[in-house]
Image (cartoon, rainbow, N blue to C red; front, side, top):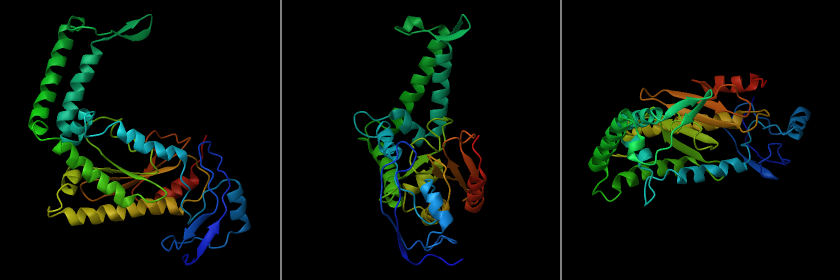
Length: 297
């Protein structure tokens, strides 16, 4: 089937997802890279539109839940007087962060007890409220944090946080557009919350490794250009998946995880998805097929 070469204006009603914005008259401009998209809506297409289906070849309208991404990011700022140093440590030295968080969890576990079949947590008001074991974990975790802070942050005027923030912000500005945001996050540190593909609740999410973050922070690196090209292709493919999706899944988000072997894994998550981390595939075509065939229980 031929590619789209025209400009089409489509009237879209209020979607049934409760937080959607009422957007009317969404313009679709020369989507040349989505094979198989029809310029004229068929009867079936119009019927699907009445049932709030996402149309193939038309980027979905922005939904209000997407606006929360920036607020979530503010809560983990890497700079300023309220900088999140735990997050900065994770992005800077994920192995150090993983050991630090392991000790913090062990300290927390010493305060957990069972009462009447329910798990309770002892309140800590003073040093004496900790057990001897808990005190050891507290001291060791504090030592690790202090050592990292002195080596990487002290007397540097916030340069570490600014460097990492600038790198991530530049990527997000490059790939976001006037409809949807693209957020970047780094995997590493063994924390399922901070490393979640869906942490920022944006339409598009990209997960990169620590070595990629380091390379992107150094444009003079010999592998910088190849990495940028890899990211370009992967993000464009992820956006292509959204563009070519046709269906009625709600709270639909897309992601891509990039590994150091220059391999990309594409993800999708949505309301009612049984897999906590969403569905995924090494190819956009397979991911689209999985979305088309997915049946919500």
